[in-house]
Image 1 (cartoon, rainbow, N blue to C red):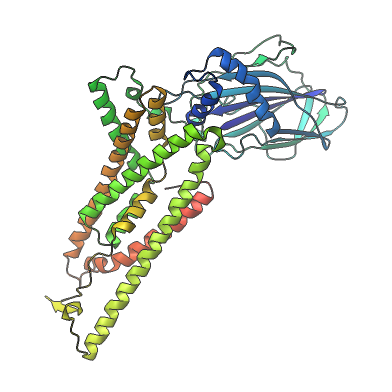
Image 2 (image 1 turned 90 degrees about the vertical axis):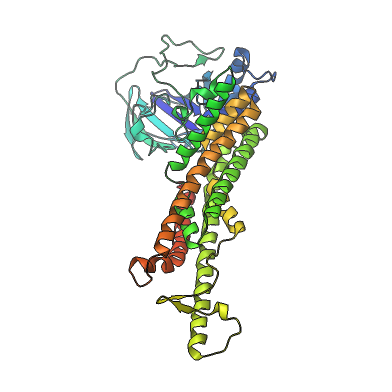
Amino acid sequence: MNVYAGLRVSPSEIRIDAVVDQAEIPTFQERLLIDTDGDGEVSDAEAQAARQPECAAIAPGLSLVVDDAAVPLRLTATGLSFPPGAGGLSTMRIVCEFVAPLRTPIAASTTVRFTNRVHVDRLGWREITLEPDGTTIAQSGPLIPVESATSRLTNYPAKLLTQPFTQNEAAFSVTPGGPTLPPPAIPDAVPLPGEPVPSAVAAAPSGTAAGSVPGGVGAEIPAVFQATNLTPAVALLALATALLLGAGHALTPGHGKTLMAAYLVGTRGTPAHAAGLGLSVTVSHTIGILALAVLVIAAQAALPPDVVVRWLPAIAALTIVAIGGWMVVTEVRRRNRVADQWHDHASGHDHHDDASRPHSHDGVTHSHLPRTTITWRSLFILGLAGGIIPSTSALLILLGTIAAGRAVFGVVLVVAFGLGMAVVMSGVGLAMIYARGRLDRLPSASRLGRIPGLAPLGAGLVVFALGLWLTAQAVAGRPAL
């Protein structure tokens, strides 16, 4: 949910050009509300009727204070459009023009503070520009540029995607005098009845408003999912594409691959455990996508999905902290039991359970304690943590098929997407189990041969430490899972 506010300051008034760029998922929700006749399409008349209410909902989030006195804003023009987005869905662009007439023209230095709280609780890009018109501006806060870095949310520079703007306030002083600008144009907005039509209406800046930042994923959704003629060949191709997309998604940074590999090594998991872990990721990811899709359709704007997704990484990270702590405690207890056995054996105590005593074979000391500390319950919990964060791509695929009237096929595609993730997750686990098996066969007296004995405790500490780090990242709004 990206928000832009462009201020033009003249001696007698301040104009605000407010633009909201919504990504595919919140737009899907909003269209359900705008489609008043429920036919699945937003007609021109429905869009026309929604323009002013959409801007009226934005107005309370904009605040303008001049010399410590609040100045009311008057809506003068509105615009509503649906640029194409990803997965056959639309994005939504809302343009609202406000004017704030000043009680008295600026004759001396005047202080101004503007605050933008529109959708401040949502994820996205937030930008302000400041332009003098017959005035001179001296800024007292963070520097506000004159020109928009995104051309009013129509073209997001790739080099800025990793560090989106978060400008919510502008504080400055104004004095009279300065170059006078041409009359303001109203790009992609229509004046309200009774408002003067500008002498020149500029075309919207070049660029495509396709997707929000973060969240613009248009390039990630292949066209095969938007095919209108669903033949068996197209269906098979779509399934294979969803499988490959899921595998590719799992190969990207995150998704707990390191944690899962460390868990399987530390708990001495088997290939069956690796496969079970991958499948649990698939199940939890698929359930999460379906639940979020239901939320998008049923809850609509009452519970925005991006607000829900913001807290899922924290929940997953705390789960990993608990699992890591459990691994460390379990391994410490196991080591204490081994130490007690050694002590009893060295003291010459007689035990009836000879199978639990350490013994020597080929010069290597062994203990017949269980070689695995893994449980299917803990395995499923870790898989749940790894798959609980839904993929935006998978959600868009599902919503796109729902919009096309093929909801069941969308669910099948989401399952295929999850299976692709499972193949990668299981493959990573199997590779680590194979590597651990090779180390187990090395002499324990060698340097590499000591690693298996240290691996369970080390793996538990790694999972616990990474869980703490992931928790800190999630709380700071930079989820890394």
